[in-house]
Image 1 (cartoon, rainbow, N blue to C red):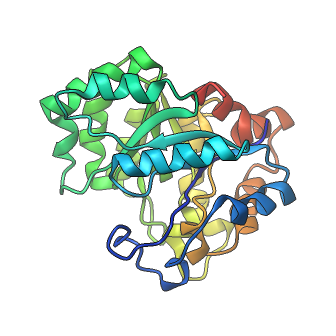
Image 2 (tube, rainbow, N blue to C red; image 1 turned 90 degrees about the horizontal axis):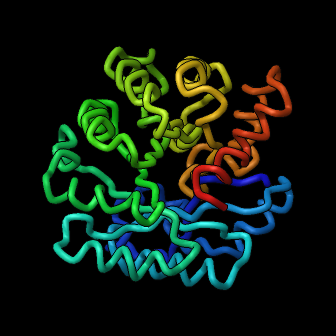
Length: 272
């Protein structure tokens, strides 16, 4: 099965999605916009990821998944610090499309990930076979590593390779964090967010290669997944560009390796 492991849908609202600064994507993006692109590039489906920190967002994505078979799973948002977190997880886990939770960490050093109430919520996820998706910047990686260290039986997925500054050399901070996370068997990583990071600047494969090399070397083909980050990635190129970057990067690898990264690992990680 060929899977795009990271993309978004939204009915654009400037207040709800205030983080969207690129005017070209300040509009609605729906399943009918993505389906022709998936078909053209022979993808069997996708994982829809939350773009707003609300339970309504989770319900919105789950409703779309119920109507469109190609949406194979949903990474939503729930308040993991809530006292009734287990009850809420129980309710949503009855939906087989619900695969995990993501939270955008805004604080400067990622201290939210070390919060005792947050840890209580994280401790419940494995019981429901749910993943937690880590969305951080390099300066928050230390806290992410500490989070992972505390939960060896919880499945984690690092989004966008921790958002490195791709027009600079890989920093020691980023490299150390990636290496530490990759040492854990329960941590996956997405080959995603590259074009989103590039934006309107000129890029080519060599722009991304130092980061792809380091991530591939550390996570290996068994824990990497392709994700387009569509439509956010449209700020740096079209849908095909996302695929071509990774396909070109993996051109010398075996068909088995390519199949893992372009779907097999997503099937395993999300129990599709």
